[in-house]
Image (cartoon, rainbow, N blue to C red; front, top):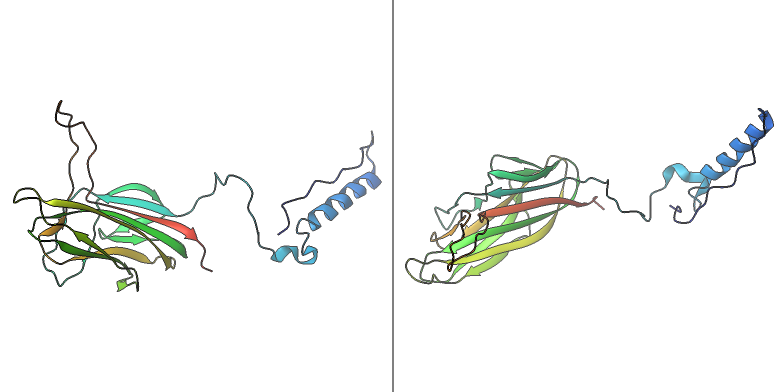
Amino acid sequence: MAMDKFRFPPLPNPPTRWDAQYMRQVLRVMENYFSQLDSRTPNNAQQYTADFFYGSGVHLSFPYGQFQSQTDQTAAAIDVAYAITYDASDFTGGVTLSSGSRLTVPTEGVYTVTFSIQFKNTTNAAQDIDIWLRKNGTDVPDTNSRFSIVTRKNAGNPSHLITTTSIMVELAANDYVQVMFHVTDVGVSIEHFPAVTAVPGTTPAHPATPSAIVQVEFTSEVA
């Protein structure tokens, strides 16, 4: 599309009275102008696609959603994969949450899925955590990330780790994705923390810590 450099053509000066010839000239000028908007392929203007977009794009809207969990989540066994669940919607723009863990998109496209999960380790050994994507109930190949969490500090003081990754995945309309996890010991779990009130000399006030946050954003059409 060749709309990066063009200028509206000057129109003939209007007469003081109605003039059919003048109107024909104006229509002819405008016809020529609009027929040349796609100047690289003027005979196929109905088939063009844009090469460049100019402007802020402030009014464009694409599917997105951000969801979080304020609930602790655990693994009952080390040989089972578990889906991260969410109980609150932060932002919704077409992407919806169902069954606690399913993030459904409204249109086909390439989407970016970003997660942030707060783990704790109560065991006296370092442990591993695997996190990957599942689409429509099937694991998405090559999406796993492995994280290691260090041993607890002491018997009453577990270690903590934030795991975060962004992954692009191709989805069709009404497909859903889930964020899955596996741990090498059930002593590793996902934990939330309530908001903290300031205590002079001890701690400042700070917001609650969700156990999990996930974002799903439309990135591009399917090539």
